[in-house]
Structure formats: C-alpha cells, structure tokens
Amino acid sequence: MITLIPDVPDNVAAFKATGDITKEDFENLVIPTVEAKTNTFGELNYLFYIDTDLDQFTLGAWFQDALLGLKNLINWNRAAIVTDKKSVQRFTDIFSVVMPGEFKSFPKEDLENALFWCANGNEIND
Image (cartoon, rainbow, N blue to C red; front, side):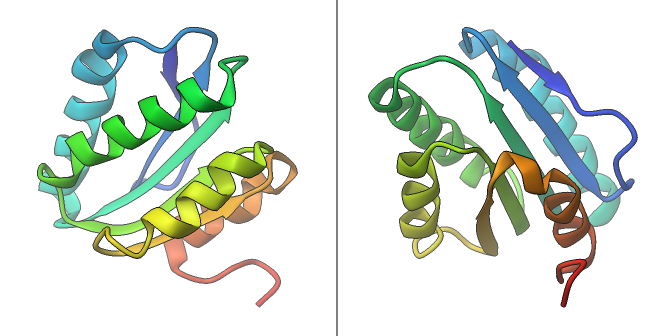
C-alpha cells in the first residue's frame, strides 16, 4: 500500500510504501498527486519512503517500472528514495544517471534530511 506522508513542504510529493504495492496505488494516488504538484510548481520534488517486506528483486523490478512510468508524466527536479535496502540505494544511484533531475538515496533514519533536501536542494548539515 502506498500512502501520503503528512506534513511535508508544499513543493514535495511524499509517499510511504508498506506491505504489498499494487498498480492501483500508483494509478489512484501517486500519479494524480504527482500531476497536481507538477501543475502547481512546474517541477517535481518527490520523496518515496520504502518500508515494505518485498524481496529485493521484486522491489527493484517494481521500483524501476514505477519510476519509468512516471518519467514521461512530470518534470523531475529532485527525488529522494528513503530505504535501508542497499540494493535499492545502489539502484537509485545508477538510475539517477538516466533520469532528469537529481536522485539521491537516504537511509530511513535520515527521513527529515531527505525531506529537507527535496524541498530545498541541500541537506540540513550542509
């Protein structure tokens, strides 16, 4: 399931993934929210917090499909992927080369810094 993360800066679309992730999660929540943010701000600052028990291969394949699906819908500015899964962190670093905008991975304990980076383009400790 994907839910909105509450109380985030207005210019950030922030989501949390838990349990099973479905195509409907993207169709009914993620894509409409992303489109609304892009229409309002002209660019997208996106945060995705991954807190799910999916195995790494399934998560990686699903994650790639989700981001590629969103690629053509919006103007990426910054995207923070928050997870403790090393494979997803590595994937984010590799994927950032082919995607427009900046992509960065953060460990779960660094959610506040990831939100700050998404909204402002720098980290709290910079």
